[in-house]
Length: 96
Image (cartoon, rainbow, N blue to C red; front, top):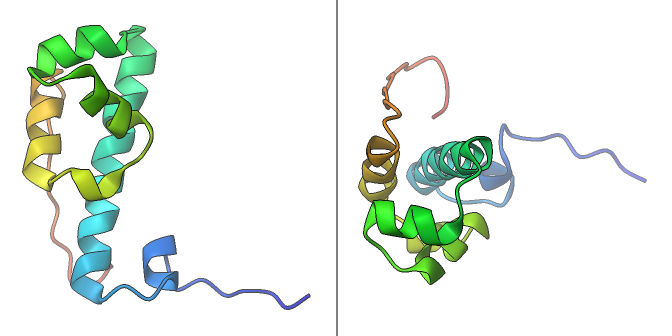
């Protein structure tokens, strides 16, 4: 079996253009933070849907990792409703 050398993330490895890979990495991190907070607080999908003012199936999509259905600003707004601050660091030395 041949070892695979990663380019840095699954999105890079799958051949996404640099800008799209960066967006996917950011959305993935934001989605992960939301789901982890839901688990930490033991919040039901119904309760989170009410808090975010969305439908329960929308929260199901979030938990199931349907990344293509969420924008960065929608995810940042959801984290804001959970009182979780989001910071952006731009560093030309590393990939997003």
